[in-house]
Length: 265
Image 1 (cartoon, rainbow, N blue to C red):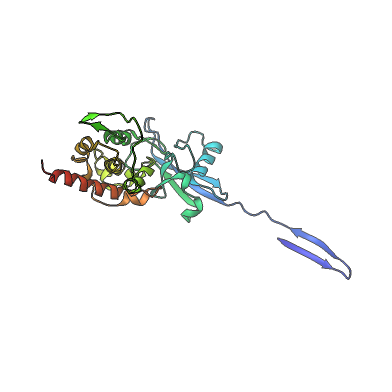
Image 2 (cartoon, rainbow, N blue to C red; image 1 turned 180 degrees about the horizontal axis):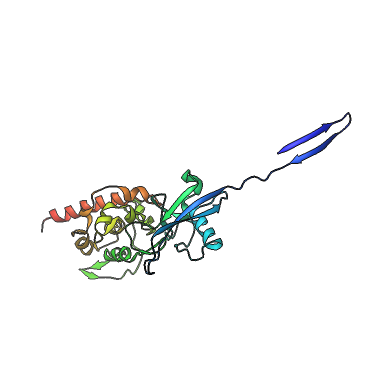
């Protein structure tokens, strides 16, 4: 702003005021584009210039691009508040939730967005979670009740102490976003490996005092694609947006498997 003022004996008169427009801040959003089913479509990064606003998240930036520039851009999202786990993506090389990643927290105006690794690409940033959900179903992620070895319905409340609940509680916070599997180096090498998400959930039910399904689950987790395939890189726990420690769950699962192996027959 330039302000020139003429001062007289009894008054001040503004002669000239020049207020140049402040240059609007923008970010460069580089987004992975690929349609695997389209003929001759080559994977590439496409750059968009997105206006910055206070509190802008990476998901907000993608939505701006979809609304104003590229309506065909494909990515998943739903709740926009870190609950549903839909918007998992790679942001500047790390698996993150788009809705929980503030642009300002990245410390750069150039942001690269791509699909999660270790999953087949369906289109752009959208990946195929078929195997992820299949592995999750394999460990029977629900309470199993039995009486004399036979399945039993749950007719009433099943009481627990606070200590019993704390044995597994953190693992109930999983939102199935798939970031842990995306960060796992073993999943990258072996698609048959159940992965940290499914194994941590297997421990969640194994540690639940209300559950009687350890025999069924142990046969799955104590297998070549089970818990001993984990080499404890710890990358799964480092990227969890809810603070769950799947690496810990897998190690505790190993202990339970060893106890079962060593138990008298």
